[in-house]
Length: 296
Image (spheres, rainbow, N blue to C red):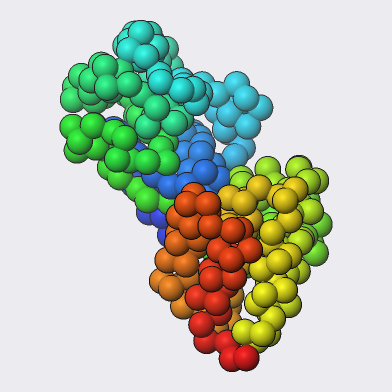
C-alpha cells in the first residue's frame, strides 16, 4: 500500500477486482504527491492474472515491473500537447489488445493539453472502447474542459503528512537525519523532496532557513531570524516556500502557529517584495504574523 494513500488505493483496487472500474479517471494533486505511483499500481492490477491483483508475480506484473508493460499506452509530460498527438494516441487505442486484456492509457500532465486536443480526446471518452481505461494525471483540474471532467471519476491526491513523507524518504534511501527536513521543505511531496535532496545548493538553503526559524523562541528573536532569511545568494521565492513549509509543520506538530494567518502572511510578503518593499522588512512582518502566539 502507498503510505498515506492507503484508503484511496484500496477503494480503487476493490473496484478493479469487482469489475466495477470506470473507464476514465482524473488524478489531481501537486507534483510528487503519488499520483503516478497510484496509477501505475492500477495499470498493473487491470492486467494482472493473479488471484489478488496486482499480485506482482504473474507474467504481466513482472513485465510491467521491468518496463515491458502489456497493453499500455503513455503520453509523457510536455507543454501544449497538440491535437495531432492526441489523434495519434486515439488511433493506437482503437486497436484491440491481441490477448483480450485491458488497455491502459495514461496521459501525464493532461492539464497541458490544448483545447483542441481535449476536444479530440472528448470524443473517445464519450464512446470509449470497452477494453480501454484512461488515466488523466493533472496538477490543475481547472485547466481541463468541464465536459472532460464530467466523463471521468475524479480523485484528489494530497501531499503526505510530514512524518509519513519522511518515512517514505527513509525507505527510499534518504539519510534518516535529513528526511524530516526534506519532508518539511517539500511540504509532504515525496517527488519534490527527492528533487531537493539531489540539489546540494537547495539543501544548504533548507538547512539555513530551518536553523533560522527553529531559533525563534520569542518575538525578540524575529529580527535576527529575518536577517538570516535575507541572504542575497538565496532566491526570495525559495525562501518563502521554505518558510511556508516550516510553518505548516509547526502548526501540525506543535499547535503554535495559526495556519490561516501564516498563509496570509506569506502571501502578503510576496506582494510586498513585488512592490519593492525591503526584503528584511517583508520577512520581519511575515514572521511577526506567523509567530503571533509567541511572546517577547
